[in-house]
Length: 509
Image 1 (cartoon, helix red, strand yellow):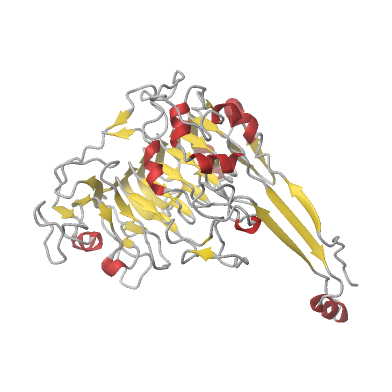
Image 2 (cartoon, one colour):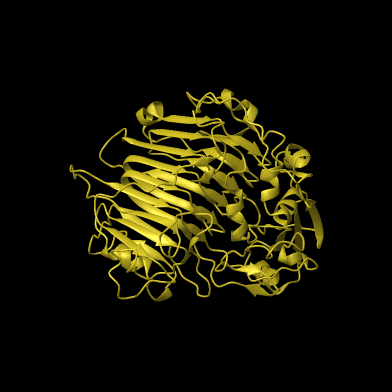
């Protein structure tokens, strides 16, 4: 039997995306920010906090560097030398990869402002390899960016230490770090720190060239840097810029022990800002900016094989998470700000700002396969601000559709807790924060829409052949968003530090 696809030729369904009341949630707050200037110097409104002693505190956090137990290496892209030993501020190395290769467990690396592209500008940095024949398991090291070229001052906002590929395509995470011991190892593990780095893939992704007069480019207005992001198999009939569109992360980790990722910026990351596998120990992700990342801003899975209920904990706090985009331009899946993943016993998510995430701000994913682990699992979500997300919280439901939960009703979600208080919409009076967001990008997102076109031609060559062989008839479908994962100006991402005291990324001090 021949199955026919009855699609009206040229029929167009204009599917305006409401994004779960996106405009209703944010229009009053955003209308003062979009396309206007403000004299507001940072006045904010902060709610009382039931879960964190840091809420309402000074709008700064410590970025001091503790003394390391091992050697200290210095790296400067502008003043360093390819043959220097890097063991003093006056003899810095030029290549961050070389310093990582030289470092051993417990060593510390200080990195000055500049752009770091790996050996001979190959476009990525790595510490250890995953599953290679030599079983190189990486090392427990700490890396601190944000130094002046003479290492006399550390300011991660003023002295930007970047990992920003520019003119060549590559297939690797921007930074791939492994710090594990063989399974069954019972000796001590160490500390891993990534602090004060900016991860930007915006110069390397493929985009349509911006053109507000050509709908296919997905350019919402003249102020946005590029047209829409292009998936690997996309070849639209318009000019294209960029070099690669394969799977990619900003920072990929396979780690254990004590891990901290702080004071960093993750912008325009093709897949995830942070994607990690965590062994036994604790990981803290704090005081970072995640903006215009695809798939998810931060996703950390437990990776412990020798215990039914692993000793793994995770704290995600004081981060600003904006404009996370879905897997495809059809807005079908992914697009989460933060994901409560499986394999981690205790997760605390607090004092963050989640805004304009195209699927959901926070997702509590599927149930653990081990019932005992699911029962013991702690998923704390408290004292967070939300605005203009399609969903604030999305809950997986076994064998059924997911459940969407607005911020004001998170306390009703049984999978969340025992800490669940203090989640709310971004309070009025935070104009300084809204104005720090790139206004053209924000305005484009607030007017996000999709046009879907479907057509069927019974006389096309393909359909004539399909009829002969009894195959299904075929139509075509075009999904055309007016904006999708467009490039965000990385320079403006750092402007979001410190705009809401006690919530989101604070000013490193």
